Length: 130
Image (tube, rainbow, N blue to C red; front, side, top):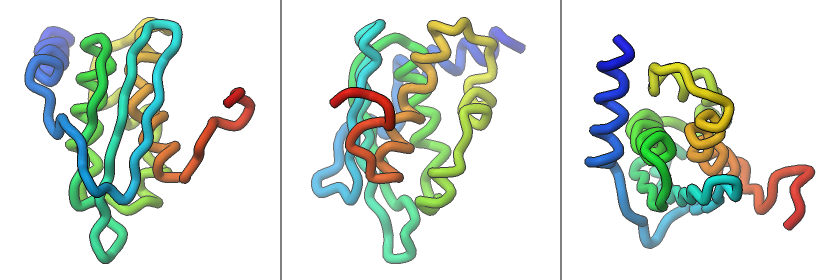
């Protein structure tokens, strides 16, 4: 089963879904993982009901960070900001479907960190320096 998920991760890495930027976007946020150099930007467009009508991500990084962002953007279409705020790390890890080392976990969760920061309107994470 892990092989199937690994193939899915590689497919999302090689052929990312929702890759690019939105202009204009209702919400845009970008961040990086300074330990490995991965960088993700997520742009969201909301409809009149406050649901995600379009989403794009861009950035660079390892297969896990890019595949995670691709899978996450597929999953959040049609969701409200409250649903985005409640999307958990377990939800994202379930999408990936493979066990990850602590280092790879940071890579996988970068897109979720970016998404939540945008959904909450944060400019910096509490406790982090600007």
